[in-house]
Image (cartoon, rainbow, N blue to C red; front, side):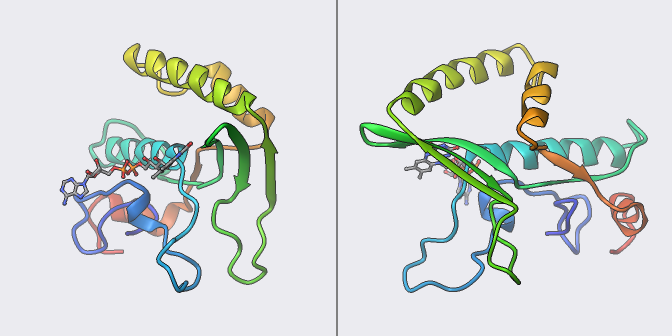
Length: 162
Ligand SMILES: Cc1cc2nc3c(=O)[nH]c(=O)nc-3n(C[C@H](O)[C@H](O)[C@H](O)COP(=O)(O)OP(=O)(O)OC[C@H]3O[C@@H](n4cnc5c(N)ncnc54)[C@H](O)[C@@H]3O)c2cc1C
């Protein structure tokens, strides 16, 4: 997929989800892949909705791409881990991330349950990322999407081969 999450040959086809653009940095004996989280798919959905709105002429803005930076509440049996991976895939050259933080405790499970209730409620109300969530993400130095350079990515949205 292109950085706009369009099909390279069919510009009106978009795809989102962890299957789409998260290739493991190197082959492993078992196909375990790389860590994947719900927030990454949320960011892809947000980017694609934004880019489709531009392609349809509904708004004038720069196309965006997901940052694939993530913060995640993960269950581990009777404990849990809150991790921040920025970005999820390490730099192929250095093998490192800008930031990687992990906190463990049973409280993560409780926080995850509370977050689930909050997430479902805000989606039912049609509030994808309310201002206070944006503020909290900015507080920990994360963003869901980032603008693409204007040139070719804008052309792709309007059907010009990229
Ligand atoms: C055991 C486990 C624990 C996890 N825990 C956490 C966690 O604590 N926190 C967290 O953030 N993330 C967690 N994740 C990861 C998270 O669930 C995924 O990152 C997220 O669900 C990915 O969403 P997605 O929509 O991209 O893909 P999926 O949720 O995999 O959705 C893809 C959908 O496509 C459907 N599908 C597949 N092929 C076809 C086809 N040919 N035609 C039609 N439909 C098709 C599938 O049935 C599925 O419903 C966990 C994952 C697993 C497996």
